[in-house]
Length: 83
Image (cartoon, rainbow, N blue to C red; front, side, top):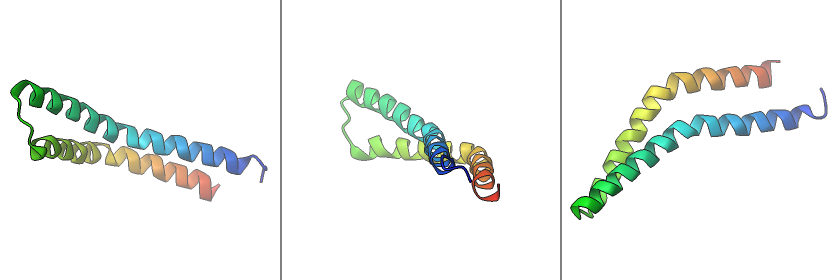
């Protein structure tokens, strides 16, 4: 094994973790911005109004991206451990 291989694998793992979390974080951020704007416009400051849409957006984002995440993670695991 090449001495630089573990570092390349760790770098790829960090990039993969970032890429896999980005759609979920982006969905939560976008919904949070929209809900915050609506709350500011209507002067509603209820915590449930702020958290429930964000939770639903994260669940939907996970459901939509789960097949892609599983394929990507499986391919990485095959490369990392299978050779």
